[in-house]
Length: 162
Image 1: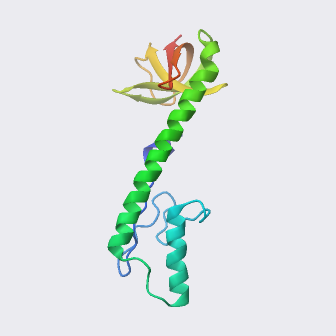
Image 2: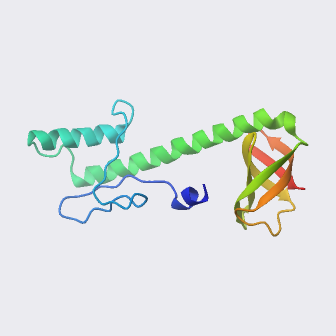
Image 3: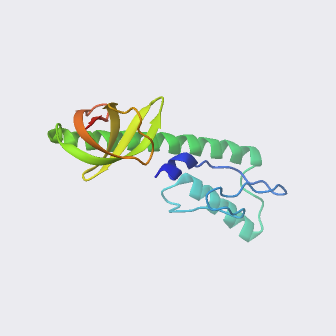
């Protein structure tokens, strides 16, 4: 989980002809394309149109400049959709565990920085911030926490170290 977070989110990029392709960092390959369901995802539709033109021997339906703009726009839209999905998940989790305030859980530290210390509880699955007793905790540490409170609207789940 920590490694995935450190990698960060992906982005759409244009691979123009005649230049070294950026490839896929996580897979460590240069020749790479990703596709899911073209009827649901605009980037896949663009890829499908480019492949169709290439296979038919026709010129590309988009200029490099248009593709750069499309890639940037799609990356921004996907990032925004992911942000909304995360917020909904966090709020739903806070709502589901509200009745468990005061309960104690075994957890693992998933983040520790000047912004705060965060833990993940596996049963029930939830992640939140350690509000008291976070000093000395580091990523990977196992810790016992008590659910201190939740803010459903903001999706906050607060713990204190036991």
